[in-house]
Length: 370
Ligand SMILES: Nc1ncnc2c1ncn2[C@@H]1O[C@H](COP(=O)(O)OP(=O)(O)OP(=O)(O)O)[C@@H](O)[C@H]1O
Image (cartoon, rainbow, N blue to C red; front, side):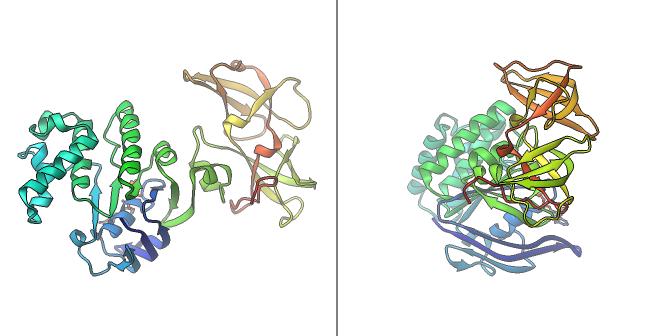
């Protein structure tokens, strides 16, 4: 197994910068997920680690060894792609053992490793089938098995589950987490699915426009996003953002005035900002609740325009007075939710509010351990 160290990685395609200086240390045995919007450079970064793409500048170290001049096959990595890329004329066993056979491994060793990987992935009964006789999920397991038999130091996954339906994606996600525990291997996993990122990653790296916005545990990113981009990227429905202005401080809480005139308390340290500075208030849908008594100061007044019942949760969409866009409020299925056309006043515990400056940088959240 091996650590991976990326330093100052840049990449341009046809003069367009795609990666703008990536520094990232991945520990031996760590499961790191790279997430970000389409086109932010996730796959390019993974392909640079694999050696399938040259970095413009910077260095890639795998297991302490600089890999710039090391060809992909000698880097100790195995990559699993979104398209399974199985050989159609070979059986499952032949597909899984092919790389070992090419490398001149003895037949018995190849068979033993294929059998072991098939047992881990529970595909032992499929070994003699050809890919066309397999379901999408089974093909993806064969592709993962092909990586396992090579006993790489580092596994690289490029959106491996995106061709599977929702149920199978959930199941395969659980299997991947188990696989990581069993093999203890270093894994780097690219996805744009935030549920995969939150559930699989020991650490999540959020990329945007070729830069790292933030890297941290799922909880750190969720509770302490460093900026508005990360805050809005993780969470479903996403965090609500409301424009406002600083209207003073009281102890460890900031006061924010909304366009409606309401003044809300948020646990944030705003000592670096000037009074009256424009800010954006962020509150997650699960932290908002409706309070009775329209007209009460300190709430967000609005009207319910849509109620979505999702089975395990209910999402209430509120048009806030004087605020463009809709505010989402998330209720558990066993809670009573307001109904369409209700006039409501939304409130939240001030400890759950986030505050961002005009550039989108988060103010430190007061009351949370540093
Ligand atoms: N071989 C190439 N030639 C030219 N441009 C490329 C090449 N590969 C990638 N790009 C461009 O680089 C940018 C980053 O691509 P990349 O595939 O790394 O993004 P991504 O974050 O993985 O996106 P997605 O989630 O859509 O797969 C995109 O604008 C893409 O069009």
